[in-house]
Length: 262
Image (cartoon, rainbow, N blue to C red):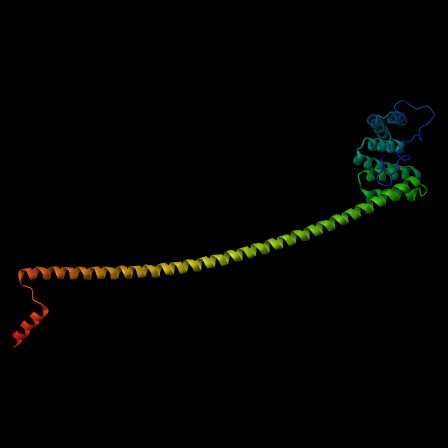
């Protein structure tokens, strides 16, 4: 095992395969005990897959064969199938013939949980092992390591939650500031629109006044042109009459009229 932080969980004693139940008396071929022996030889040679098959066959032949169940858990664990190793050790716990053997199964169950960083479950398994075998220093050591890691995890979780909380506050602040800026922008746009409308109205009013003045000026200019045309026409008629000797001034017209009144 590598050395995580300042602790290293100890599996030396418990992960060792069990040989205690092998008998020196003659046994039948492919009996559970023979299958266990073959599995142990394969396990020691490093062929954990083949050893798992032998341990499975032994436990199938004798469902209460604790050594086969325990060693199967170790072989599965060694193949890095941690989830399955948990279930195998749980079965071993339930089939242990005495407290000492059950303590070993609980110890390795704790190791399987620990390898998955399930520190709370590992702590409970180690405590169960120590209740059955209080003198097991390896289990006590692993329990301390698991508790230390659990505290680290809680601390990290707390820091993460605090960081998320601060990020949430920051995001809320940024959102409120953005909403404020949007509100100010909309108000500014509204005021600009009102000013623009007012300007357009004023320009429209001015254009209307200018148009009316222009129309008035055009009308007056037209009147003046008409008046000038009439005067020009009268002057032309005057000149024509003078040439014909029929033109009489206004005084002459008045004198004639007076004479007629008399």
